[in-house]
Image (cartoon, rainbow, N blue to C red):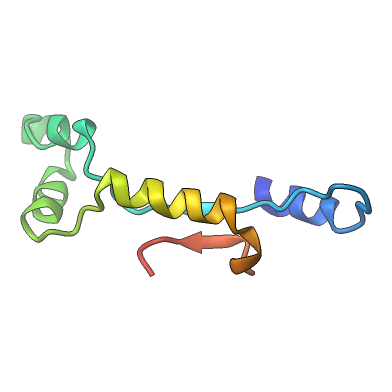
Length: 88
C-alpha cells in the first residue's frame, strides 16, 4: 500500500518524478534459511514447509535476486507494473 500511495502522489509531479516498485523476491536461500531449517519443530510450526522448499529446489539464489533488482533500478522503463513478484 505504501508503494501505491507514493506512485499515486508521483503521477502529478512534473520535475523528476520517482518511479516506485514493490517487489516480492520469493523465498531467498540466505543464511537465515539455513538457521530456520535446524529449528526444533515445536518452535516453528512451518518448519516442514521451509525444509521442502530447499529439498525441492524452490529457493531463489541471492545473486539472482540481486541481478533482478539491479535490472529494475537500471532500466525501470522496462517494468510497467509497480507490483512485481520475481517468481513469475
